[in-house]
Image (cartoon, rainbow over all chains, first blue to last red; front, side):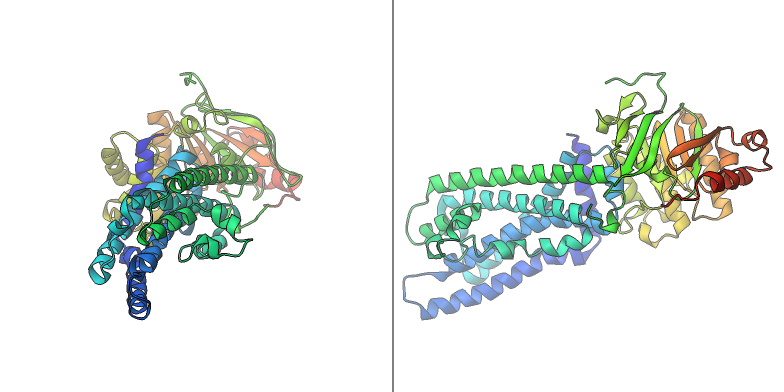
Length: 267
Length: 252
């Protein structure tokens, strides 16, 4: 892979972010709103619930970690959508840039924007509501890694869907995290789900992360085996997403969809 | 795979493309030598853009091969496309980046050496100095075409594909652009495949032309002598006569 070409994909996003406050603001704004909203909800729940249980790490922490996953996904898809919106796909795919270089550029852009968001999230939640990710112990490190990898996988798969179905398919991608969240046991244990939902929950790497972090906040031990499974599973999803993107790109080249992308002709 | 120094800049061999049972490009074969400017003309829907898209690797041929500077596109896409660049009205540069930003991003994508100096040189050549920090979306269509041409020359391509490069610009600017491209082909020995509906332009710029009809080459030769060889007064007359005779049913 040519690092200069990957750098070009990142540089394009840096130029866009540098010259456009409307692109910078959403990196922090929604996170700040979520911290405020869920911070006050958890503070209120702490006053009415039985003493001894702290809703801050259990709920506010869970919300923010899910937000982190969503931001990672959006970091990747936003970088891709910039090329869709500016009708730049033909120039990109008719260049010597390889698929792997392009996707790597999108992912690295996603890393930069989501790490910025994560930093703001941690600072706000800690200063305003006393949330410390340290309360999750060392499990937070593999936990964040799993959420990050799964977020990247969702972003790459989402970009592939838009590449295949056309610009209007964007609306299918934005709500993906919301669609998955009931299955990912963000706020409740997998055991509380009905039987038919539980296999789906266990197919999603974030479920293992949230189960483990919940156990830690309630005084239990981190399930390292579960986190290892989640890591393996998320890597599997990432590989599948990359293969899906490559497949979709191949189909688009065979059918000429890249050359007439705005026509949104699914043939 | 190493490029041969004597290889044609472009060699197309028995290239075909079918869309849903309709043949758009039909067993097309031709080559372009370094320094040659070849005009590809034909009615709308004759297969010109489809051919260009196959050369650019964004459309897979049904059969046949595209070899760029001795490198098979299907086998070594990145190396082949590193030797190509293109400009087309339907592929505008992102309007939300400035001229310099666009040229830097694409210069890095094409791995152009001495990029800053090359950008400055092209900005001078295409008279874009006063627009260098202007977003491309704010430029007129003629100015955008000049930026697109500057992008197309960033990597000093062995093969330059121009799809109606002067379609939206005034006669004076079009003339300047034609001179730049001619100069580029002579100085850098770059090959140019130029599609146009302007027969005057084809006659003025191209050393050879091919008239495409229903995905096949109908006639080929020197645009200055072809009309006489077919008993026509001008290239435009020849185009109209041949196109009406052979291509009435063609659709884009």
